[in-house]
Length: 380
Image 1 (cartoon, rainbow, N blue to C red):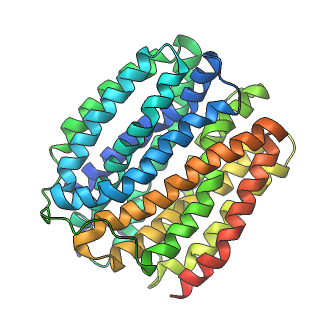
Image 2: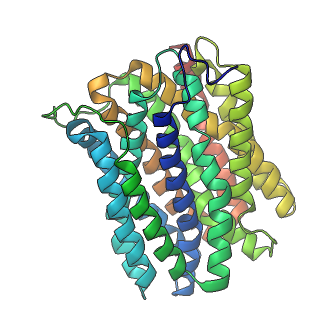
Image 3: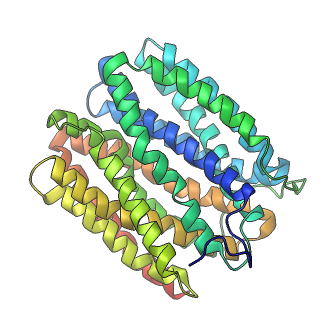
C-alpha cells in the first residue's frame, strides 16, 4: 500500500504536524503516569493509595471531555490545543515543587480537564487533514504516534526518576508543553461553529462504542499505575517493560494492518482485537515469572488494544455530525477515562489487598464483558 499516493494523498505536512503533537503528548504523559505513583509512595502513600492520582486525573478528564469537546467545536480546535498545552505546562511545573502528596490530589482533577481538552481537540483536528475514503488508513498511521510516545516515555521517565528524582521530570516536561503550545499555532485553521447547542447525551451511535471503551479501560487504568510497581517489587531490570512492550505490540499491529488493509467495514475486526487484548491481560494474571511474563502479555495486549481505538474512531469519523465531532470524541473520552479512573481506584484496592495478579484477572474479565457489545457494533 502506497501511503503517499497523491489520489488521495495521506501523508501531508498538516497530517505530520498533528501526528507530532500527539506523539509529544503521549511521550510526556507516560513519563508522568508511572513516576507520580512512585513519588507519592516516597511521600508516604500506600500501594493502594498511589493509584488515586490516576483516578482523580482521569475523573477530571472524563467529566471534562463532555464539555471540552463541545468547547472545541465552538471556539476552534486549534485554539483549544494551544490553551490546553500551556495550562498543562503549568500543572507539570507545580508538580515539580510540591512537597506533600495531597497537593497532587488537589491538582489532578483540574489537570485531567485540561488533558481532555488537548486530546479531543487534537483528535477532532484530524477531520481537517484526513482525505475522504482513507479514514481507517489515516487513523492507523496516526495511531503510531501514541505508542511511539509510550515506548520511550516510561523508559526515560523512570530512568530520570531513579537517578535524579521526580522534580527534573516535572520541569523539563513543563518546558516541553510550552513548546507544544507554540507548535499548536501552526495547526490548520478550523472554522468554529459559534453558539453551542448545549450539553446532550450521546445518541445510540456513540453509546455502544463508549461502553466498549469503558469496559476495556477498567483494566487499562491499573496497568499505567501498577505494572512498574510490580516490576520494581519483583526486582525486574527494566521497570517499564510492560508499558514499553505494550507500545511495541501496538506499533507492530498497526504496521501489519496498514500493509494488509482494513476492507470496506473496518469495524468488523473489533471483536478479534478485543480477544487479543483479553488474552494479553489474562496471561499477565496467569503466567509465572516476571520480565518474560510482562513482555509477552504486553505485546499481545498492545496489539489488540491499539486497533480497538482505531476501528472505533474510524467509524465515528464517518458517522458523527461534522458540526459536533468534538462532542462525539468527547463522549468516547468520557467513557474511556471514566473506566481508567474507576479501574485505577478499584483494581488498585484489589491489588493492594489481594495482590497484583488478582487485579490483572479482573481487568481481563472486564474486557471479556465488552465482547457482546463489540459483536453488536461490528454488525451495525
